Amino acid sequence: KNIFIKEDKITKITSQELKADEVIDAKGKIVIPGLIDPHVHFREPGATHKEDFLTGSMAAAAGGITTFLDMPNTSPPTTNMRALDEKRRLAKKSIVNYGFHFGASNDNIAEIEKAENIASVKVYMDYTTGNMKLEEYDALKKIFSCNKTVSVHAENDNVLKAIELIQNSNNALYIAHTSSNRDLHNCIKEKIKNDVFVEVAPHHLFLTKKDIDELGSYAEMKPSLKSKKDQDALWQGIHNGDVDTIATDHAPHTKEEKRESNYPFGVPGCETMLPLLLNALNKKRIELKKIVELCCENPAKIFKIKSKGFIKENFDADLTIIDLDMEKEVRNDELFTKCKWSPFDGWNLKGWPTHTIVNGNIVFQNGKINNIVAKEVDYHE
Ligand code: DOR
Ligand code: ZN
Image (cartoon, rainbow, N blue to C red; front, side, top):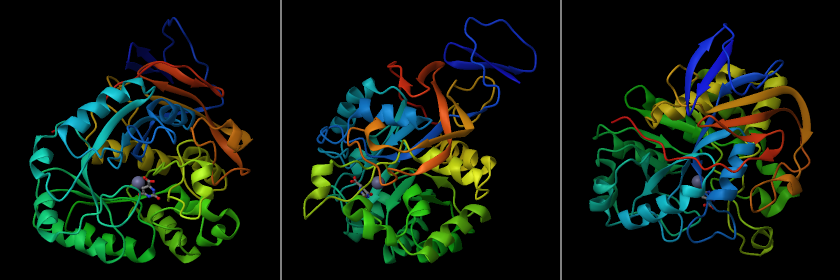
């Protein structure tokens, strides 16, 4: 089949050969929808020594990601309209498409109600980078009934608390980076009654707490790495259809920061998620259909992103071309992320993206970035 693109749209999918100004020969490769990464921390504003919208988006492009949704724990946090507008201005340099999660605080319900064209309201119920942890029950109650999708960073009892809070509203609940068997099963139980969506992160799928022995702080993130048993449960959840999305939780910190005794939590992930999954595909641990469902289709559906996530006529021309036979080692010095390290450094992976097309433009091709700016996504009501 041939996919025809005119400007930023897919105009025709046909076995016919139409004339085109530019042709990409994908023979021997596979074309999938561009990945939508619903969970990244691109650090702008406030910590651009770790990452910014240009370097983060370059890492995304190199990883086959054509759209990302940025988290609000920047500084200042994205908890009011002024901060959101400023972030919108800063993100204009991104070379892949983008959207934003809005942050919740103890007293910003009025701002939350004003915020338009956002993916969700993100509530930090457990400790992580940025001082955004929310504990006041009354504030939580108000936020969970705000008529927007609620994303939570919650572990253990806080997963149960989030589930209890969402029950009296019509909102969907999105549980970020589910990492343990217990948390996963508490979510699964609730799925029958409510719109509860489960996200898992690649580091929890490919590393366990044993890896901390060797990697030290480079394998420390929130939620932390768990046991093999927890990891198996996450994979089981993927196969059973209980896991809805895989998202990077790309959270870069510099090597210097990671070497300090009170190092910050988080690992980068944009450039390695798809190769790790394609490598797993080559090992028959996951099917391509599943990868596309969890990394492209479901993020678009859950966050109601318009015209993305599928290869369809009239949809945006956001495509990733993959080569399942390409073998390459992950190397810190070849990464586009500003932090220049990965917990997967030295891993030899089979299956890599070769081209990333955003709004009809080739922004990544055979290891090279082409700097063309992208745009903010829109959402269905
Ligand atoms: O380890 C983490 N680091 N987990 C998060 O959820 C946030 C992140 C960060 O922003 O550094
Ligand atoms: Zn995160």
